[in-house]
Structure formats: structure tokens, C-alpha cells
Length: 68
Picture 1: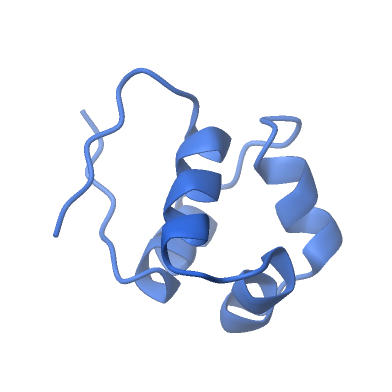
Picture 2 (picture 1 turned 60 degrees about the horizontal axis):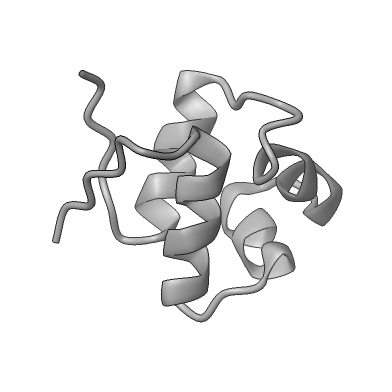
């Protein structure tokens, strides 16, 4: 199922979908070859992930990225 989240930032969308998938930040980080600290900076929009990282996050969450 695709998720369209236009009313929030990328980080907030990642956090929402991650929580719906019952994954911790550490789980997501492990799936994409990153660290919990990185995820904890992405979710509040402190750091904006590069496109390839965003695609890895989406894949780990069973989603796909569609840029409008």
C-alpha cells in the first residue's frame, strides 16, 4: 500500500510509517545499514536523507518513494 503524506515533513512521514510497522529506530537503522543516531536526526527533520537513503528506508518499511 502506498502512503501519501503531503501535510508533514519527510522525517515525520518516516517516523509514522516506522511506528505503523512496529519497528524501532534501531531496527530501521539496521535494515538500511545506518545508525539509530542517524534515524533520530532524520525523523525530526534535523537531517534530510539523500534520495538513495530514503529509498532504502522506504524499502525496509515495505513502501516506495514517489516524488511529486
